[in-house]
Image 1: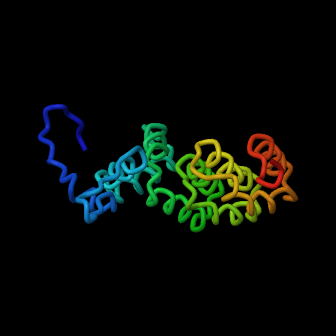
Image 2: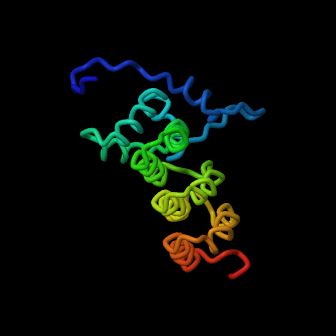
Length: 183
């Protein structure tokens, strides 16, 4: 791909894209449209496409030049394809460094859809993956991509984790976001 300002750009069919993303609904009173940051990120991920998002994950994990920019874009958009690719790499690769990088990247690109994956990271025998795994919850809360209530089951289980780093992170999270019962 070559980036140049004088290249012709294909016109985006915003109507089709908004309909594809479920942002336009018809009512008796006419048409309702929804926009905002999250729908815009979803639209950009669609425009870039699944293959580009998955390749960006692979570029980051391989530490190719431009990896940090790729991570930043994925973090901004947090496309489901990137999250799924990170999880796939974590589950399928034998190289511990690659697996760690996949969970570390997931920590930055995740949204609440990955909460159910965190116990698998915490159950991994590698302390690094365990640490990045609880970091997923920390970042979800920090970036307001999940509520404490959404994470409560994972946090409750991680409070007695054998890894001190995990327990420390849970204490840190509890200080910033007390559970509903502690308020």
